[in-house]
Each structure stands twice: as C-alpha cells, then as structure tokens.
Image 1 (tube, rainbow, N blue to C red):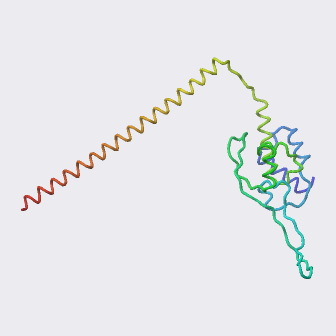
Image 2 (image 1 turned 180 degrees about the vertical axis):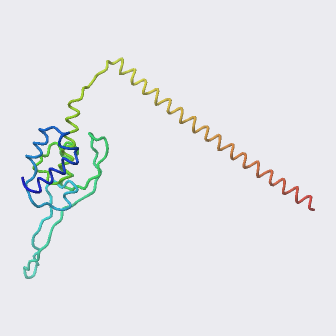
Image 3 (image 1 turned 90 degrees about the vertical axis):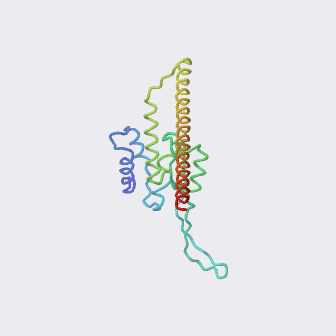
Length: 207
C-alpha cells in the first residue's frame, strides 16, 4: 500500500467513525481496494471526479507548427444531489462525466455502491461510499415489523386526525390574529377622532 493509500485509509476511518465501530469485512475491503496511484489532482480530493483529472499537452501553432505546453482542466460543477439513505441533499463538486455516471446508475447512493474502491480516486468519494455501506449494513440488521390492514388503517386515521387538528389550530390562530389587528385598527381610529374633536373644541373656545 502506497503512502497516499495509507493516509487516505486513515482519513476514511476517521470520517466514518473509527475502525472499531465498522465491520471488519468492510474495512478489509476498503484497505484492499484503495487506489495505488501516488499523484492526484488537488481539487479532486474535495469532490467526485469519476477519473477525470487535469491533462497536459502541447498547443501547436498553425503557421510554423511551434509547440507550447498547455493544460486541460475538467469541467467541475457544484451540485445538490439527493441521497435517499441520508434523506437530504448533499452539496458536492462533481464533473460532468461524474454527473452522467450518477444519472446512469440511478442516483448518488447507487453510484457510490456500484463503483469499486479502486476507481474512487478521491478521499471524499471513498468516505461517502464507506459511510453509505455502513448505513445499509445497519439497515439490513434491523428488524422490520408489519401491521395488519386494520391496524394500518387505524394508524393512518390517527395521522389524518393529527393533521386536521393542526390545520384547525392554525386556522383559529389566524382568525384570532386578524381580530386583534381589527381591534387595534379600530382603537387607532377612535383615538384619531377624539384628537380631532379636541382640536376643534380648542379652536372654537379660542375664537
């Protein structure tokens, strides 16, 4: 294992939650499948690039065929991708090639699960893949209970009653607020009328 692979393994274990808290089979697979490449693009450590990195080549002039060095950078976009296992959006920097791969796989979770660790060049992608595999393994160990149709109907009816009660409470609160505003507006009008009457009486007395 190269130095970069060892450092990446330590960071992945630290992000996911410690080596003792993870299944031994999972960590062994992570250790065996870490990329062995020694050089990686700096920006690629903070996103999912799907193998797209900076490339170098020559720019050839049309007249004399003179060559000058140049580079091609990947098309990186910042996107919000929805994760079903986390039930929230994940803001991540991805390349357009990685977006096409994610769409083809059916989502960010499926892409991370289907892509082997050896093809995950970035630390962020490996950390997210290990975290998602850990959550799916915990879900597999959970016991699932099923209710009969009558119980499901009662539970659904209870939820409907709670939603109806919340809706009625909000309606009553809006009505009370509207009445309070009307009363305050009426009080302001009465005070203005009394002030005008006092001014008129004062001017009449002075005359």
